[in-house]
Image (tube, rainbow, N blue to C red; front, side, top):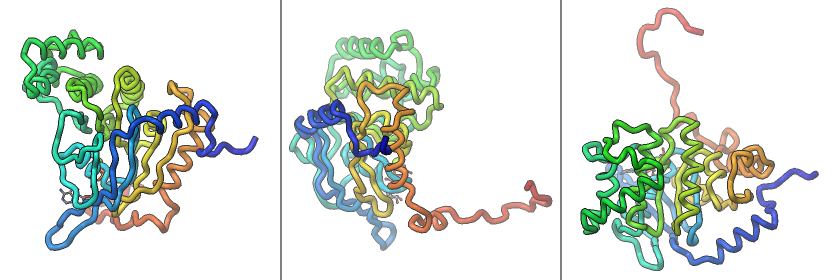
Length: 298
Ligand SMILES: Nc1ncnc2c1ncn2[C@@H]1O[C@H](COP(=O)(O)OP(=O)(O)OP(=O)(O)O)[C@@H](O)[C@H]1O
Ligand SMILES: [Mg+2]
């Protein structure tokens, strides 16, 4: 059998992706450029990024550290301005935060002084939902993620996985069109992380939501995504949009499949180019002697 290529798609996968691409475009990013000023100089963080996502798509974005992934998602969230180009959500320009977009960040971002229930209620109350209705809805969401017994706990009394589950529903309560996630599971241990990935796919399946998920973990991107947008570093540019050739529902066995290996090989070639092309030496200078260490440990 010839080697599996990441571009080879089974009929089922091709049909699924065709269906996905025939759905409405929810988010359109046109030649988005972001420049930061650093003193007198200007640094281009993102250079003419263009892509689109369709309704109920699960899009992952990966790229080397510092390529502008967080900047991009913050612009999509309306938390950061763009220098040039356009971001359209349902054909309307994005120029500020809005309830059609929910956001989950990397760290644990629950309010420590509020109980779990009040954390979930927060966004609803901000949108003028009555206390009674907000409490009812918060309890329904907590039930959905199996944390109804923890409603009166404070965030510090929860495990990392529990906290991120609450952070996800907190972003979902206002029924956003799109869920923006910036490395939401990177602080979790490997086992919890795997469970959260499967769990997120379960939630995604049950509600009408488009997900944009940033990660630098190639396995995570392949396991979750319909398509993966690969960015290059300095400045961040689109390298490739990869269609993941795995069927759904995704299962742990997929990690060992030929399709998975072929996709990972392609991502690795894009993210970690052969030595010489990457300027790693510049990014990681050798460590000078910090103290008088006397004898060697090697
Ligand atoms: N507020 C800012 N002012 C100036 N430069 C910034 C600012 N925010 C980000 N940058 C620069 O923009 C570039 C992209 O940063 P960003 O945090 O978006 O990268 P990233 O891909 O999310 O990195 P990581 O994988 O480490 O999270 C970096 O060179 C960073 O120094
Ligand atoms: Mg980042």
